[in-house]
Image (cartoon, rainbow, N blue to C red; front, side, top):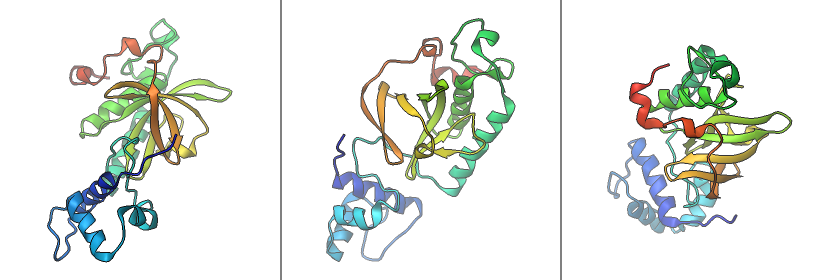
Length: 224
């Protein structure tokens, strides 16, 4: 899949970064806008695409409309992701749905501190939602082991994976997996990995077991 460079999105993303760090520059309006950042590039004699290739890619700027919007990964957000991943992993005892619920697949918040991979991912999603961070349930396949569910968070430094198999948050390109579908605000989508990010490549089917789970709207009245 070919990604389409979008100069307006590129400049808007960089403006967002500059505003997050309260960076101001004499002669340019603050807060930054896409227009104002592009004006800066014009003044120094380079195009947005040149700037992205020379600097923006290394700074985590996203110029591709095919890639969803992302979270700015500050030190505080990075620490929060690591804390949630570790604490949820430590609080849950891995237990098969067939033992916990009497069926082969049942997605929910963990029951009595026990669940399998989807329970870990849903619990992490709920914890991050308390801080205004939206995660996405991601269904994948591990070669030689079968299906698996993790939580994905889009950030300016790539897609971060919160996985019950690991004590630390991983970049998506660190994992040897066959990516399948991801939960979005527009339903489940098939995905493809492009470097350290995912792009959607069409509609996908919800995994078995997901139909039992009423997503975020019930977080305020579900406990675990």
